[in-house]
Length: 211
Image (cartoon, rainbow, N blue to C red; front, side, top):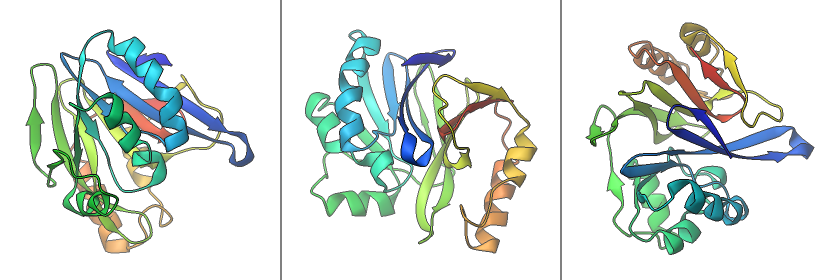
């Protein structure tokens, strides 16, 4: 684990056969939020580290950008240890979670909505995620200007704790058909993202990007 940016903690696991790093994050606050759970196996390793960095703080929320193993595969296990935490996700993702029996206190958010706490402000962005173009969510934290990119900003390599310099417009332009296959939805997402002005991109895979 590492303190990757201000009050943001990064947890990572590296899969050497595919040369890819999987990141989860905790934004430390009085009402801390976990961004993604990792897979069930990753969550087992994550839980003791979470307890260490939380140091008695409440884990208030768990953000899930879309329904995939590295985003929410460990959700049931983490809720076992942090039962007070409330998952935040899109309506589509909530419906998928309910099919696996996970229904407890899920907060459904729509694109454009916000969740405001004392120490952070979360703004939700439409994410037509992956091949089925299911309606997921991307997350912008407005007070610290952190963009949580899920699979949208993507690079290979063993990248725990690594931050590179980058340009926001370049990252937007680099969104590929492999990430958003429908051209119209890809253009719409790019238009949505250009309205924001992040200082830091917390990636799901690859080095984080300081803007």
